[in-house]
Length: 196
Figure 1 (tube, rainbow, N blue to C red):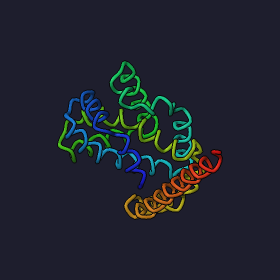
Figure 2: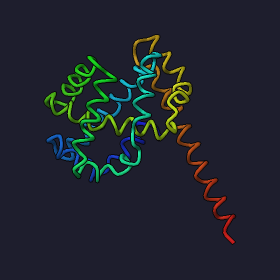
Figure 3: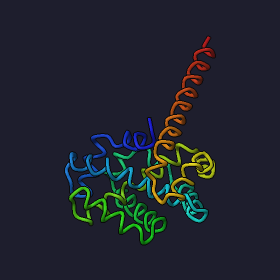
C-alpha cells in the first residue's frame, strides 16, 4: 500500500457522499475527483518539502493538526464541524501553496471538467486529510519523513518534476506500510503470549 492508497482508504462511501454534499457533486463525481486531487496534493506538498523553508512550513502545519478529530471523517464532514475543516484546509493551502494554489485548482478543475470553485472547495476539505495521513504515518516527525524521502525530494528539485521521483517514493511508502504491518503482527503475538 502506498501513501495515496492510505489517504483514499479513509475516503469511504459515507465520507465521499458527505464530501460530495459539501462541494456540490455526487458520490461518483467525488470519487473521481478525489482520485486525482489526492495525488495532486501529495505532489504539491512533496515539491514544497524539497526546500528548507517549505519543509519548515510543512512541519509547522503537521504539528498543528488534531489527528483525533481527523480520525472520524464521516462524523466531521456530516456535522457542525465541517465548515471548520474547510476553513482549516483553506488556511493550510493558502499558507503552504500561496500563489501556486490557483494553478493547482485550475489544473485540477480542467482535468476533471468541473468548475474551479468546486475544485477549490474539494481541495480545502482534502488538504487536512492528506496532511493528517502524512502526520500519522510519520509520527508527527516530519523531519524524519523528509530525511527518509530526501533522495526523491532532491530528484524533484533537480528535475523540476515529481514524475522521476514517484517510483522510488512509492517503493519507500510500501516499505513503511510493510514495516507497520510487521509491528502490528508483533504486537498481536506479544499480546497472545501474555495471556495465561
